[in-house]
Image (cartoon, rainbow, N blue to C red; front, side):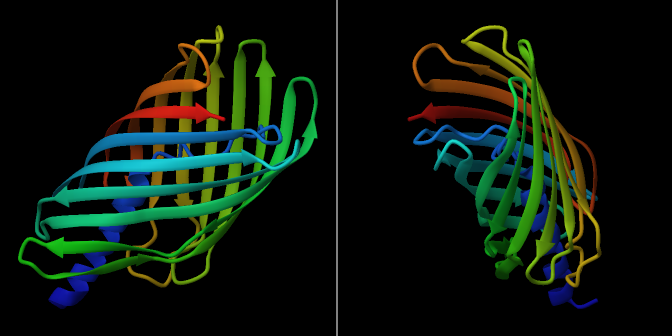
Length: 260
């Protein structure tokens, strides 16, 4: 394999590592926002992981938005920016917007304790700038894609459960993917909330780009505190339980939720 081919394949692993490190906090729950209500979440995180003989460190920021268009319709979006360094055979640094998404979500059914909704998400094409220690560099692409998802949520007293299954199809060379989430939470009062999230991505096809298919399975415990008013603070840890063709590791994060 030529040096250029090795570099391109390693760049794709780097992009997969960035995407796998993405916390998926931004995925909307089954509950849509009331008409006119806005939720803005800012999160910063530090990730450290390994892939084969390489070690990764990443500092990332994300911005997530939900806006209620009506009592049953919600618009939202996500931006995720990361700076990553790694050692190993192809030591270097990567930076850029790894995720840029917009979605529309509609509530189909609601009772006093449960809700069912569906969403359609567009993920824009992104480019990660990668530079090797030797000075060679290029852009590593992620193709645009569409994801259709079904969401289910249920309240059981102070406990709530939210589940999502989404099928993402690529508009380019990337593989088809299944994204699933399960969130179990406990809200004992108006100030505190505890959550445990299972966040999983499985590639269903190989794709037409070398090493672009990856699988990642994660657990993420979160503690959220609302001292007063419309601002909530969260801290959490995400652990990659298992992965394929991507770096796995542990991330710590801090976020601020603002409601308007």
